[in-house]
Image 1 (cartoon, rainbow, N blue to C red):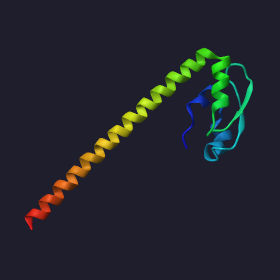
Image 2 (tube, rainbow, N blue to C red):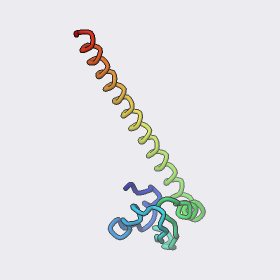
Image 3 (cartoon, rainbow, N blue to C red):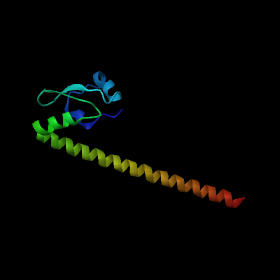
Image 4 (tube, rainbow, N blue to C red):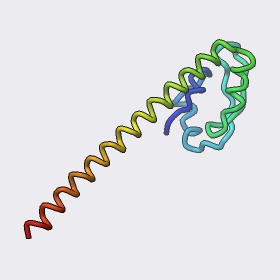
Length: 104
């Protein structure tokens, strides 16, 4: 399961907290990397962690926003690349189909 980017700003221990990546709605506490305050949220609803970062650590929040935007751009690039590959393969299959159909 993928880990939300916001967790990079909290003391997220993959071995200790892995179960929360699976049961994404379950709430758990994490310590902030900058002030050690414990904030409760879930992997599915991260707004408490984001709000804490936004209100208490604005520079780190801005860094988080840039990181998130960059991640989304890379995801879109990947999806677009995958879509183009799919279309190309579909085209090849179509050419093979037409070739076989008209040879017979």
